[in-house]
Length: 219
Image (cartoon, rainbow, N blue to C red; front, side, top):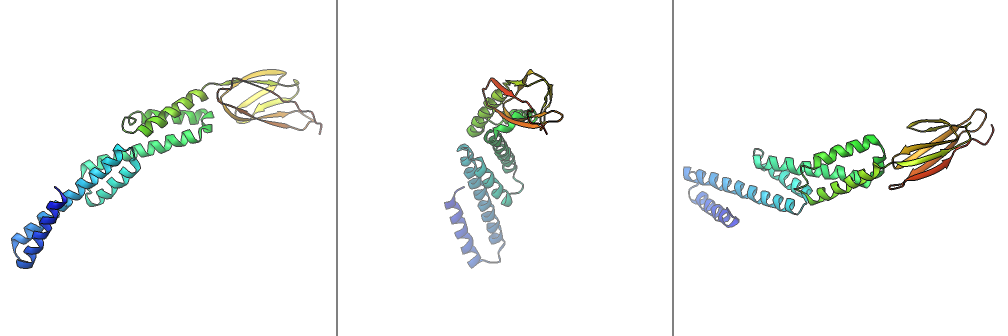
């Protein structure tokens, strides 16, 4: 089916309608021309979408398939291609977001969700080089965030120390705590003294960090 064949068919239909507008043969020809036009539009849409998919432009492929589905709502091939394109676009966006805002991976819960998305994406990386590349980047980040650092906390034994959002350290003179890369706030309290806050940022690949938390100032 090509555009030239469709143009010839439409020309023949116009002539038939001009000469024999009421004949059964003219109605049959009209139906065939309509069917030919439908097949051609579907073929062109599939080719356009498939070309975009081969370029790894799955967002454009998805839009193209969806537009074609309006005219061909029952076409199984279009429906399946839309499902595939939508899945790849969604996974690419989600994984890219984890990579772009990777500081969130310091949370064990967020890292677990990212691992789950990586597992889901593994079944589609063969279809998209971009998804494969982003998945590899996220996998590397997760490995780095899974390497905790030693936080050495020094104090006077009288200051009660806690790490906000994680738990208690206690009143110590020195204690080592293993923490994933990320930002944390340490809080020191002591009766009769002003509380102190200390923000730390454990970087990727950092192995050790030392801090001193002591309540000095009386109330």
